[in-house]
Image (cartoon, rainbow, N blue to C red):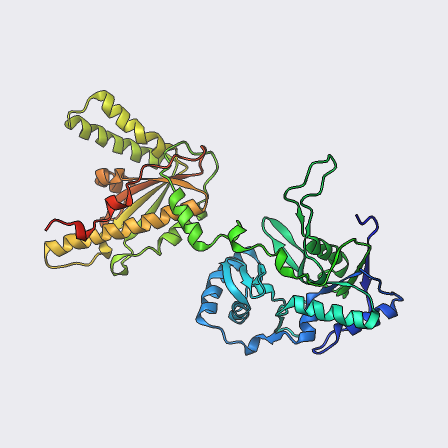
Length: 472
């Protein structure tokens, strides 16, 4: 255990230029501060000066954005403006794409997997502490190699076995604020495996693995700072570690298969499609914001539709007198229809009560209508009828998109076809245009109950009609 650890900032490192020898500058800086390097000192070096020494600087005006960069820019710009953070130019976004193995998320920030294997914002590209308003700094292509070169050169200059950690600062899931992280190591392993050791009470540790390089990077960050502190090199002395020439950063990187926070898009979609349920239980009292509903409708607009007609129309019905009048009038018609069918009073009451409470009490009730003015008009009734079916198919696709968008926002919903049986009442009470045909209700809210049991689904062979098995 290290009981006395010292963190020493080197204050005499000059501004770095391409080609500068970092190891030599560290030795010279130590001399100016009367510091003698010792065996098993750890030197933590800010990535920025490695980037500068390698000439990993790009000029934004020399970057030509691709269509992909413009597409991402158009998506993230309004989100960034909403969050009141700087909007990334298409040129900067192109640089992020170029430095990434994969773009994982594009919201108000861009999260990528860098070519080095790090998951971080903007592929680790930074403008801070880089001279020039249109210049950006890129991560070193091989941080481990740069750490090794510095360690070996320091050994040749001082004859001391020293651990090297190249550091940067990353944001973290679920927490605000950037912290120090290790990008490259040499001489010191990025993790310390404590499995098999015993705790204070003699219990054997079974899963404790410490990210020691990141912990040390965080400690160095206290002195390095992020602004104008100007201390890019820190010596950490007194920490007990096992010197390891073969150490590399890869052992600290979690692979995609075991990273539950980096779920592949295909896995997310598969999981959401299987998990969505028709929610017919009580909703919680949590308020559903109208902007959240509008966000879901925006996504529903991207559903496929015949001739790209987009004949769907969404009406948001909040709790209140209009909704009450609508549901009461629909129930009166339902009662009349069932009485005409010769149904018993007990059956009628149960039928009405089955949906009445949900329609009245759901935080939000959505009406989906088909706007027939968007349908093609033909000279014969057969094609007009087929066009109507195309319209129904189109709004059904939009409804599916809408339900999945609600699910993605943590909302639950159920799709009801009651408006089909009371079209005139719905149009009259809500004052809908003549071209509208009410098709469906969606009860929407945050769930109060737990998981809903998965409903029965037919076997695959029951729903795929095999032409080879058809009758001759």
